[in-house]
Length: 337
Ligand code: UDP
Ligand code: MG
Image (cartoon, rainbow, N blue to C red):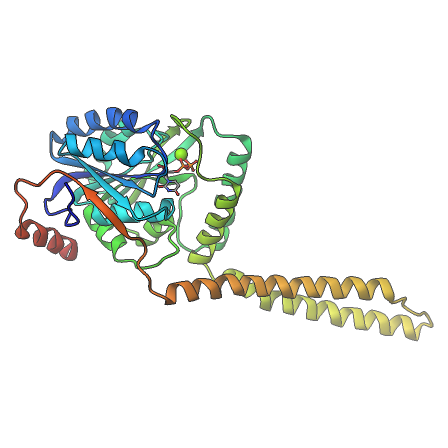
């Protein structure tokens, strides 16, 4: 059935899965995830599958599962908004005491749930998966990912642990705080790092994709990296002053050099060095304009205050014990904790 008022009942666990064209892997995903959840929580869990505007049969499959099982919730976004926004939509709708984020392609093993839960029960608010191996990923992907995490930790003050994705278990209160962050350019793992609280890593081996192929081609990876850096740091904006000072000093030295050679009777030949200088300075200035533009464009997009995403439909079975009290209780818990 259709029900936009999702989440009236509090569950012990919500599993949130963004899905984009994953028709080949969805059944396997559920076949592996459901037993793990049942072993921990019996029937008291939900799996929120967020269809991010898939063009294949993903939504039909999700709706079928949601019809058949009270534990499956299908959410269909109005179009493709990208991985991070699909995840955001799922987190907003999740009503579990614990929230477990998974990729639909089974690259993150759901079987890690008990181990992560154990940590959460010890008192950690965020238990994130840290990759120790990335089977089935190209050398190029691994090298660029490595470079990216190094660059990120160099420019960003927030601690964003290396080699972590969005595979993590979070407590209800962390998710509530995350949901209160309104920004549009979302780099979820960085935002969770920014939140703080007690966080800990659980190491795991990242499996190859179960089916289909990655939705992160180089172009999207680059966008993702620029989003990450611009949302967490304004250091690139300071390049302008540093470069300006650098070139100022270099100019003074050049002047001294020209003066000395003139006094000692020599003449410094001009054309090549002048051309080189003009090109270097011009390119530096354009580059800085580009960096300013990145920030300005983001401010413009944020200033419009459009909704981050639109939900088309929510498929779930009617809640037996649904009621306004459960809803407000959930809200109060979010506020008080
Ligand atoms: N995804 C999504 N919207 C997109 C692209 C990806 O919801 O526009 C989902 C995808 O179905 C998967 C997760 O985000 O569950 C991670 O995507 P993918 O596996 O392609 O990324 P990779 O693991 O290669 O970094
Ligand atoms: Mg993947």
